[in-house]
Length: 178
Image 1 (cartoon, rainbow, N blue to C red):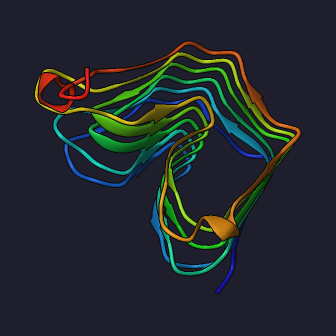
Image 2: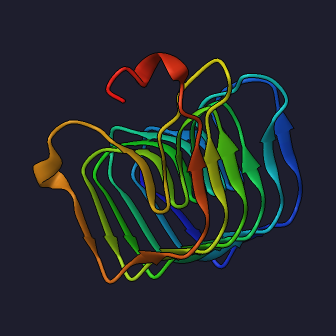
Image 3: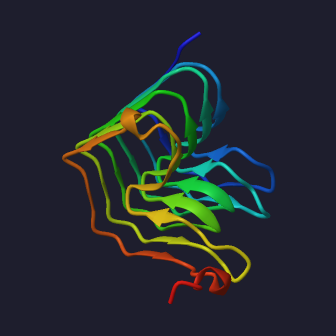
């Protein structure tokens, strides 16, 4: 059954040691439509949690439509960490959204989406700081998307931008080309 979330805001703190943390949804395999909603609370892993997002931690299988939403809270985790969605593995359309919260993790960290597959982003932006990596890992980081997975023909990003600082850790072993 489709899940619809409208005119809703999380203002609380979401903190756990397990995977799949989100300001509105931790994990979903169902069709989701989120509109006119947001997150202002922090979403944080207390351990090595994967799939952490300001709105949705992990979205698999059925489609997702996100319109007129925002994240202003700090989001932190291990891998697959994003201002809106941590790990996205279903056809997704994101329109008129923004993130202004600080987003951090070890790898696959993005201002809007940590790791994305079959995604359409329109009129959206990030102004929050994005940081990935540690001395033990090298991390992919991006102002909008931390990682694009296979089949690049299914991506469309238009009228969107990033102004936040983006940083990743460069692991010494991978500097052989210098």
